[in-house]
Each structure stands twice: as C-alpha cells, then as structure tokens.
Image 1 (tube, helix red, strand yellow):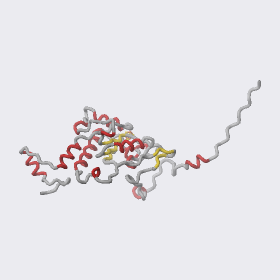
Image 2 (cartoon, protein in one colour):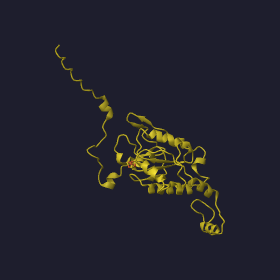
Image 3 (cartoon, rainbow, N blue to C red):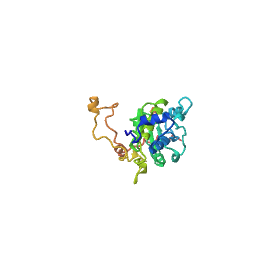
Image 4 (cartoon, rainbow, N blue to C red):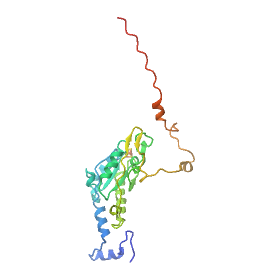
Length: 248
Ligand code: SF4
C-alpha cells in the first residue's frame, strides 16, 4: 500500500471508502497528531499592536475556537504555543526566552508581524531586537504590519500541517538528551549579551545585498555605528563659572 507523508500504512483512498461505510481507520500517529493539533493552547501575552489583531482573532467574527485554540493560558506551564505578537524590545527579549523555556513540550512558536520577525519599522532602533528567532526556534513566521486575523488563522493552519507531519517515534521531545531550553540573554549596557544564540541562529557570513540591490544600503547619512566607548571616555566639558553673587 502507498505510504502517505506521515508514514501511515493505509492508503487515503481506501480510508475514505471505509469511512463512507462508517469504519474509521487511524494510526497512532493520526490520533496523536489530531489530538494535539485540535487543542493548541496559546500563551496569553502580547507585546504591541499586533496583539490587538491576535485578540480580534479570538473574538466572535474570526473565532479561533473553530480550531480548538481559544484557550489562552496565563501560565507558560499550560501553554503549547507562543504567539510573539508585537515588537520585541531588547529589554523584553530575556523575559520572552524565559517564558519559552518554561513551556512544556511539545511547544511551538508563531512570530506575528514584521517586528517579531526582524524588527519591523524599528529595525534601525537601538532598543529593538531584530527577530526573536535569534534566541528561540520559530515554527511559523507571519509577515505583515500588522497581519490581519485571517493571516493568524492561516499561520495556525500551517502549524497544524506541521504537527500532522510529525511522528511519535521521531518527535524531538521524546529523544534522549534533547535540549530545548535556551540561554536567557542579559540586558547589558550596550544591548543583549550574548547578541544571539548560535544554536538557533547564525548571522550570514556574506552580505548579498550589493548583488541583489546593486549597491550598499545606506540609511540616512549614518554609515557606521557610533563608538560608544570613545564617547564615554571623552573628557567632559568644564562646568560654566558661577555668576557673581549680588551685592549685599
Ligand atoms: S509589526 Fe507593525 S503592527 Fe505589529 S507590532 Fe510591529 S509596528 Fe505594530
């Protein structure tokens, strides 16, 4: 018999024919994945404007409950999915990573909006992280500023497809020695320490922007970052002399 993508041993056509006669055949993988994908509990937290769209997705018009994903949990211990909905500032990033580490397996992440994917409109900001995927693994990237509720539902369906393709024998959370806790960065005087987690994300070795766009990208007149240490070490200007006291 033909094998399907998730290694079921029963042909889908045969399954459909049997189903018409009231006989349901399912593998353990089917049941396991069906249960997980139909009851994803998201974590209840939002970071900026994208969170409003996330909230709208849970309201009556879009009704995320149709996918069994309406139970937003206030505790990471009870959540399966983290929707990073909004701008991740460098001050907030350690908390996001800590919450991810506290979630139970199996756990998934959707980055919602340009901000959480790559910094969005704040990409040149000194205080905004250029993508939460530098610290935690992301399953679905959802572009937009903000993505509409339909887009979040689409992202959820893509995640369900991913869950459907997983197998109980090979899923990483049942493997020995699996490590899905990532170092929580420190918020130092010049940003996050370390700047990224090499287990999850590696910066590109080569800059291909010149080939793609025909020239280096310069934003404004700034061509290089200021040397903050030199600025701090520079001698401070002398304080102005105090004015003469008024005559008694
Ligand atoms: S992507 Fe746009 S809408 Fe979403 S948090 Fe960033 S600025 Fe706001």
